[in-house]
Image (tube, rainbow, N blue to C red):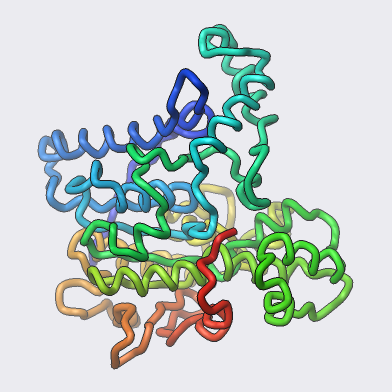
Length: 383
């Protein structure tokens, strides 16, 4: 059996420290820091017994955005051999230069400064306080929920991620990509603490997807007029995560081997803890990470035998992909009890195969969420 190890360390190239743009500073320093780290790996990994020709870059959420940026950047070419994108919010546009600069000016105002020299005199707590208070003055509703991040500058961030994947301006490497079945739950339940009635639900849909508001309401008709947060969760999961991931997996199959997953194991170990109760009955954003890193017990929760089996299954697939460019191993053979994970193609034996991980048992699914995603038609999933 193959095993993996990981080194986890808090890094500081995020938030305002990594992405501030003003008249004096150009931002995207978080991306250049990451690229420097990739260059360091190329120069030094051999000293630790590693192979510089066999580097896998993977990230989750905002980290997946970074991976996608490197996949579409000529400056990062050759630094990694394959990539894993976990719960990438494809629909969230990267900011423009003007949006990033406007946000930077807003930050300066909140910090009580007019230039970088003033900021350098502020304490870390002053900087963090201003960061928390800084919103994105322009942009979409969902962009405002994640105000700090990269912007398209034509240099360190070469261009729009969606366009890069769609038009083949992406590195020719194998890809493993997937989402959870309730990636939108945290955004919904932490934003709307009280039940949402059907009128509010319709208004929110019209804001998030104005060109197809009527279709969206039809596809996600509330089962109850009293609380529609579950339906809103499904809409955001589909529109921001699942459907665009499905679309770009199709784009990548024209370039290199691609595998797609959907993680569906509820975080039932949270039941009774008081922490994110909505995730105890859903596979929330990030729920697969506890299984990937096998740290459920470290977090103080009960790690059952089925949990351990699922965790081992994920580790085998991920490690095989990192080491052998194929989650199944060398010859598309798997461990006993595990599935042969078919590539995501439009060809037999399985059309647009998706590995459903823990639904509650793992299985191979065909055209996962295809009916819903196809109903959006030519929508390019811009939230």
